[in-house]
Image (cartoon, rainbow, N blue to C red; front, side, top):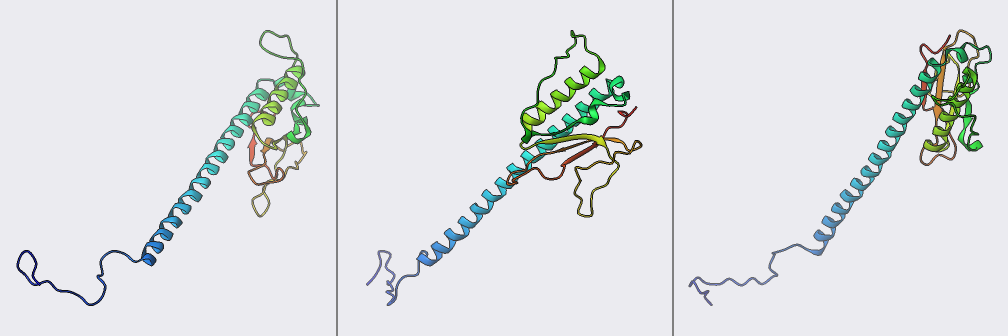
Length: 189
């Protein structure tokens, strides 16, 4: 038998070896599926990291805002019963109660302004940080050996004023250690 071109055709006794076997196709599909699953897991971690970074940034802005409010109210800071030092709020205890409003056109004394400042911070913690907790106190303590910050504070007069802020991360059943500790330079009288 000859082909159209005139050369003899060869006939093999076995099967022709062109294409892929079913096993090769299944192995290739398995490898592709593993790659897609890995990419999806990586995307999930990236989204979680972005959310944590945004929350830490929001917490830093909130602590900085509180520090500026405290610096703007030196009379309240100088009081022996500093209203800012009573700030220890856990969002799980319910929404904060609103004091009298102290805006620019309102006549407020230093203590009323401090109560209003504290309310606005508590409202922001309640609304923006799941399971949020914030504390303002005097503290010179350091993190423990594992790097965890405690909620407890030194109440020594020489210790700096600090803001401690924490929230419940995804998958946590309760608020853990503070995730942010900001010393308030210039806020102490």
